[in-house]
Each structure stands twice: as C-alpha cells, then as structure tokens.
Image 1: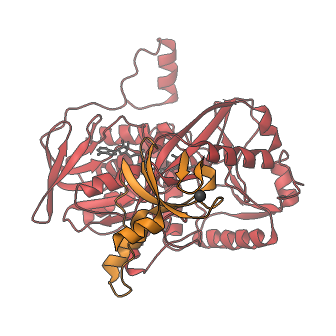
Image 2 (image 1 turned 180 degrees about the horizontal axis):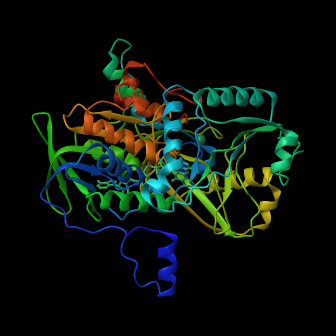
Image 3 (image 1 turned 180 degrees about the vertical axis):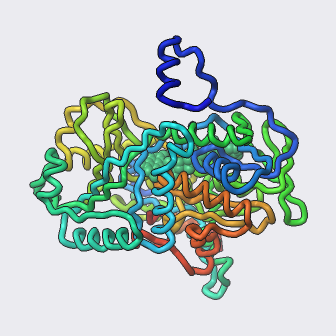
Length: 417
Length: 90
Ligand SMILES: Cc1cc2nc3c(=O)[nH]c(=O)nc-3n(C[C@H](O)[C@H](O)[C@H](O)COP(=O)(O)OP(=O)(O)OC[C@H]3O[C@@H](n4cnc5c(N)ncnc54)[C@H](O)[C@@H]3O)c2cc1C
Ligand SMILES: [Zn+2]
C-alpha cells in the first residue's frame, strides 16, 4: 500500500478500517544469503539499502525484541552534519543528504524537520572553536553560520543571556540540522525493506554464530538454527555480547544515556538548542513535550534506566540556560544502552571471519547516522569493499593508531567521550 | 548507586570517579607488542552482568578501588583497595 493524501482522506471517511500492517511477520526460512543481526535503525537501514540498491539476494533481519524497542526508539532525535574530522565529516554529510530524501524514497512520513540547530558558545575560546568547526562544515559542503549574541537573541529570546557564570556569546547555526520522529524512521525502513522482500523476524534472539574454518556458516537463534553466507552484526549496546559469539573482543564499553520529556506545552522552542558549558540539548516534539538530554551516566551499565546524579546535572544545566523550563512538569525519563568506542567514532568493517561484518561504536550519536550507516554497511556486505564515505571507520585503527577520529580531542581511551 | 569505600564507608556515587574495567591493573610490558597493547587499552569483555572495574574515591580519601558489581542490576558485591588487589596479582 502506498501512502498518499488521497489514501488518508479515503480511510478517514471509511472508519480507518483499510490500513494494513506495515510489514509481514514471517517465520524464518532455514537459509538466507545475508542475515542482519539487530533490527534497530542501523540494521533495518542496512537491509533496506541491500535490497533497494545492492543485491537481489535473500535477506533477513533478526531482532531479539520488537522493532523500535532499542535505541532507535529511545533517542532525542537530533539529526545534523556538523562533524569536524575527515572521515566523520564526509560520512555525516552523506547521511544528511540521505535524510533529505528519505521520506520520498520510503514513501513514509518520518517527520524529518530541518528546524535548525544552535550550538551556543560562552567564551572567546569557544567562539574560535565554533568558527573553526563552521569553516570545516562549509568546506565539506554543508551549512554553518556564526551568530553573535544579538543574532542568537533574535531567534532564541528566552535564554538567560546575562548569566553571571555562563553568559551567551553567540552560536554556530546549522540550518539543515533538526529532528525526526524516531520510531517512524525504524518503521519506515522496516516497511521499505519488507516491500523489497526482506524477512523481518522479531522475537528472534541470536545466541550463537556458526563458523567453520574461518568462514561464517549461519547463526543459532531462539527460533532454531539459520544458515547464511554472510552475516552482519549491528546491535549497538549489545555489540560485545554478539561479537563474543564469534570469539571477538571489541573496543566497546556499554553505558547508559538518559533522556527526559516534559508534559505537552504550546510551541515555545522552534529549534534545537545545545548548551556549551554543560551537557544539555533540547528541542520540542510535535506533541509539545520538551525533549532533552545530557551526558552518559559515565560508567559501564546495561540497565536501561538512569541514575540521579546525571539527571541532576541535566536539570541544573537546563535551569541555568533556560530558566523558563522550571515551570514545566517532567513527564518521563528513560535510558538506552550506548556502544561507546575509545575515540568516539564508529566501526563499519570486516572481521577476521570471512563473511562476518561488524557495525558498532555509535556512541550517543548514531540516530543521525541511520541512513548512511545502512547504505555503507550494505555496500561493504554486498561488495566486500568499504563505501567511499566510510572507509575510515576501520576496526584496526585502534591497534595501529592510524586514523583515530577523536572529535572531542580528549584522547582515544574509554571513559573519555 | 552507593559504593562502600573500605576506608570511608558507604558513600554516594557522586564522590567517585569511574576509570573503567579493572584490566587497567594488568599493564603489559612496554615491548609486549601492538596486539597486547590494543587489548589493554581498547578491547573489553564489557560483560552484561558481573564485572570488576576501577573507581577512585576522588572526593573522599582518594584511594583507588576495585569494585565488583553487576552492570545489569547495579548491585555491588564487594569493594577492595586497588593496592591490595594489585599486590595479590604478583
Ligand atoms: C537517550 C538517548 C538519546 C540519544 N540521542 C541521540 C540524538 O539526539 N542524535 C543521534 O544521532 N543519536 C542519538 N542517540 C544514539 C542513537 O540512538 C544510537 O546510536 C542508535 O540508535 C544505535 O543504533 P540502532 O538504532 O541500530 O540501535 P538499537 O535500536 O539499539 O538496535 C540494536 C538492536 O539489536 C538488537 N539485538 C541485540 N542483541 C541481539 C541479539 N543477540 N540477537 C538479535 N537482536 C539483538 C536489540 O534488541 C536492538 O533492537 C541517543 C541514544 C539514547 C539512548
Ligand atoms: Zn574513601
């Protein structure tokens, strides 16, 4: 079924009885050409791109829970292309271009909204860094404008500009940045993949990876063994457990990232705003809730909930920057498990096992990467060579030291990003 | 989460700095080679369950601690002075 204005009208007039499930729920076949482990944003986008662009082989996505239950349905949905280093910068630039045509490609309303992101700065040093980053973004072909304090005030009149400790000096304004409806992105890719013949199998946990003489042969699952010629691992916070099934130890530490949403309010916040002096970023959802978050909880954890110290820090930062937020009631908070890499950048690479591929290390920023990660991982799996915009996402960069991508300049070690 | 420092008693998590997996205590020899150093600095077991990691009682006695805890439930099983653990490793 194609979605259109006509379809919405017709269904509205006939009691909405004609809508069908957006994808099938098949039982797994005994064998596929390609198996993708993990039905998060990255896994579904990989399957979609494989089927839409690279191959007509038989493909399955195996998801241990339900579609949208992982980080893809838990994040604060910020989409941007404002990276600094070669490697990241061309990749996220590619991803933003894919975002800009995603809804047409998928015939699906992902509510992608390019409402603009303002990264605030609060000192001369931060202004210099923002100018430098802006120049890199423009060099990459993306957009950036350096705003002074009055320029920011025109757009965001409600900030505390004269905060004694952290006055607002200006902002780097990235107009093509914005937000999207996270579940819709998962559902859209799931539907798009399904329409192209991909089997999406929910409640199917991979429990083992079969390898013979260094070649992948298939997987063991809670629904029985399934053979495959190629297997892609793309399970975000669970990367260490799945990679261990292939005898690998990966450079990942899993931590919790929390997010918060207030009760629904009338429109007050038109853009995405980030604080430069504490971890805090915020936008307003189309339902009216103020959606915001901060830093990770800063220690290894698989508990999909947060701890109070980080909550306190986030709320402190919110009140410092945006005192008006104190009047809103907090409705919910939750957490997701992040696959943190030592340098804060991801891995899309082959492994030491033939036919087994690895996609991980998205840290707290993998939602914006969903389209390009899927495109690039699909390219790697189908052609056995990296996509040109992802060739720097190598696993061996940590061992060799060549091509480390430490955007924050805090060092390539766990616990530094 | 509250951590029981062997020297100061049970304290709020805010007083502690988290360093990472207790693998940090098993530093390879300088010439051990790139594979050993890659494992030491980057590659992690990262278990979902029981683990041991290094914390510092930064805002207390500043001792380094090995905390044995559960990464799924956040239950803490035991805390030892890193100095003692290191001595036991030799
Ligand atoms: C609170 C929060 C805020 C965030 N904010 C942003 C943001 O503003 N912008 C941004 O770009 N990014 C953000 N992120 C990061 C982003 O959400 C993640 O990097 C990204 O979603 C991870 O990729 P994924 O969608 O494939 O992960 P997931 O949706 O977690 O998918 C992984 C899937 O693998 C499945 N799986 C695991 N083990 C197995 C197994 N053995 N067998 C089968 N399946 C398995 C899991 O069930 C899961 O569904 C945020 C994350 C969180 C938690
Ligand atoms: Zn102490």
